[in-house]
Length: 163
Length: 176
Image (tube, rainbow over all chains, first blue to last red; front, side, top):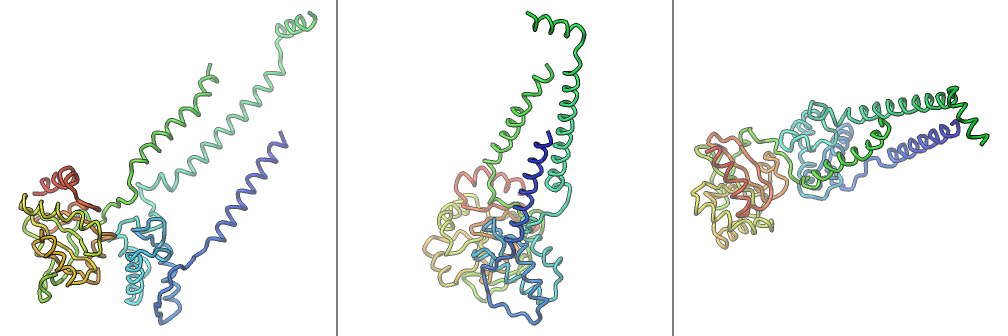
């Protein structure tokens, strides 16, 4: 029993380590370098942050930095223009959502439509925990039951063994 | 007995997942819901392909139900759907407005002369600004705009006879 738990623990730890490596090795990769001039570095930083979380409507699995699609270039241009016009980050995201829908956001907003998406995994985790708990308890009970033979059973067992 | 039944749980789960995945096969991830449906057509001031002097606003779209078709000469699928647009304009009398998207004027004029012109006129959106306000992410796209200038429907892709009869015509009739 103890050995089994040890193994589970090791696998879980491995999974965590792999996830962590993935997260650190996949940071912002800037594939498209345009000559956007920024007057101050804060704007540039905000540009870079925004461009990574906006999704290209045409090449659906790329953000607007990674994508070579003309539409992605347009959106980068818009982000640049809006930043320079003094829009806040939220206003820029709103601007994009008003035109392209929530689809342009890599992180979908939390609303009744997306509750399942956001909280579903936790629900499944809870369900799994309940199942594991029930199974373990069932096992223990079965093991206990197995040890307690009724007198009748004992008699039968003896008969069988002596035969 | 109860334990026996429990053994069927994986099978049930498998079928439930199967149903969802099967449905998923039929979904087209490229079909984005338009953020603009139910909202007024974005405001603009544009010239037309044939008349650089014109200054038209979104008010030209009001009055009756119409189609706004986003096209460009660089767009291969636009050529494919063009004959159907010509047919729709001729046979149904429905007003079709063009939105010439990020194109060059001389080439657009040549195209209209060569392939016939189904449009009332084509708005000339050279820098793609109106296209962006519309949420255009690839031509051809076609919008149904009602008499008050409200966007009612968006179709992305090539309009052929099938699409017209099954998707667009019912919507047009709904808003007429």
